[in-house]
Image 1: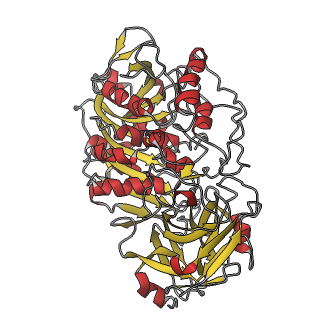
Image 2 (image 1 turned 30 degrees about the vertical axis):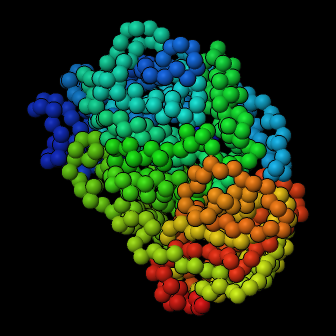
Image 3 (image 1 turned 90 degrees about the vertical axis):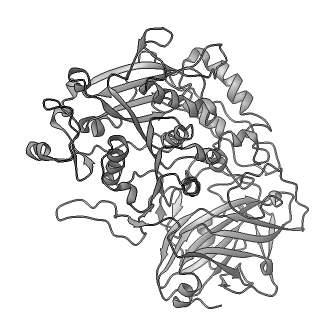
Length: 640
């Protein structure tokens, strides 16, 4: 997540003046006034709004209700505005596209992560100090992101810097109340309910109600996608639509997995305090105080991020958006890459499921890429046009899930560069007809053992942990002492996997603590890089801490605060947990396989080699969501 955000591509739509004047869907401001224009349900570039020299640019500070740096004063959030000149010259009122970020002012140039070369039950080695991001008090332009795309279409664009970053006051709280609420007050200001000031500490007010309709849409990717969803959970009036792209919806599920310390893909050893150091670009005069309160106070120790156990606690609960979804009043269009192992797909899928359960207007766009990836531009434009300007374009009647298949070909026209494959609409995700089918491994997993639909009467398999062996190396090997691999026969027909796989293992460890990793793969294994820290042969994967077996009984969203317990060497424990959600087509000739490992070199801590895991196959199973269920597998030649 702590990487510069994927920037919005400018969208240039050629439209003749005659077409614009004849568009029946134009929003008129009066016979001689400019206004947004909509054709086929989407906002068009309006010539009167294209001249950037006429745009009005403002910067201000909006006052909040919190004091994250404990200086006795309410924190103010730094905001900039770019809007068509007609909002002054013609009294035009426009709706707003809003982006917020902790990255706008810059990030740390040296930000060491934790050393993952440690035992699971040992104290982490000290982390090297970071180099703080620079602070620039004279910087007044926050960002140019979104401006060229939306201002020419008759929207204002607003940016704000997260608390404790850039010229916003306070401290970075990484997911806590101040970070979630700061944007609410910006939206309140756009609706005349909060105060904005021309300076950071002064009392000269600036208002938005002369040019703002009060209708706001938010969009962003990764951390910048987390913030729109966080703002929506406040239930603030005026936030009509949010488009979170690859949002981190639970810091626990970003930095932990089912009781286990687990890094996000590509950022081995990162944790909340590392992210804090990366974004803390606020006024240097207050950094030591913020470090004391947050990084070295709230974040630290057993009641904070707790790298010693990986257990869930109140610290993580305060940084979990899923329980707050019920408060959302905005329409939500989620977007996520199915091969994103930085912010993993379950972050969006779990929120989508919660939105649907509460009957909140929502849809999800799932593509085959990695981290980032906006919904198709036309779909995004239709959502903003409908929810911000009331254009009757039927977007609310579309399918709730837009999914790009891994078998879809790029779309291109003669003489044009290929573009991303078009998504197919579905009523929901998982796609209709998806049913969990339970598979069982047979003895012999150090080779490539059979995986069937019937449990074996008995049998155990054992592996020896060695983090030096990557998952790809283990999946590619015909024989390996460091993993167990079970697979179907080669498929005779296409099999569609859609949803969340669930694993149940009865497992014993030779040590008091051990990593547990499960990959769902295709064979022959293809190690070609794909997505964010993914491979083409990986369908999905998941991780768990066997010490938390008392909490790992049903699978699903992990929020159990019971602490893990040291393992008795040789004693069996039952654990059930979910892998990452996915949607993939398996093709004829491929085999569907499940691989069990201990440590995962890309994601877990790196204990010394030698821990032995033993799996009781008669009491272990893998529930995989198959469209068409058992009958589809039978058609593909999978027998009991």
